[in-house]
Image (cartoon, rainbow, N blue to C red; front, side, top):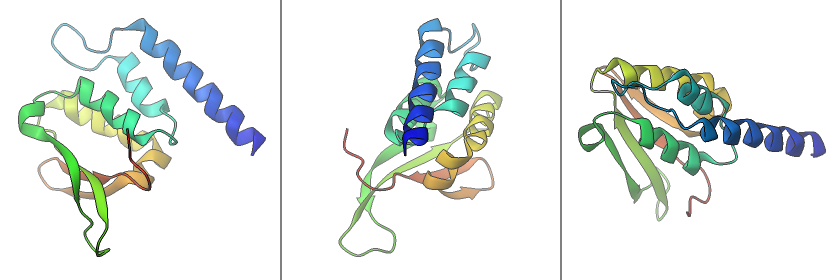
Length: 130
């Protein structure tokens, strides 16, 4: 347990240092290497923060990003916090998805579905209160 906590603290420290750099998008709106590193290194204990960060660098949010509480797909009387996101075929968003996949544990814990055309569904596990 101590080792887990140490890795969590170290991961948060690295991500916080990267966030201080402040250059997450280039002049054309594409995610920088720093932003992609943040996505890849974000600790799995904070999925809501991860999605909030990804939302902040996502292009075409008004068309390709929807989130909110919905009835759970197969557990009666339970709600899920779902993210329906689409890349809109934009290469910058596709790059973000690849960085998300590199964060293997976060991806495995939250990914629900992928569809042709760059559509992805994620759900937060457990408590998802702000």
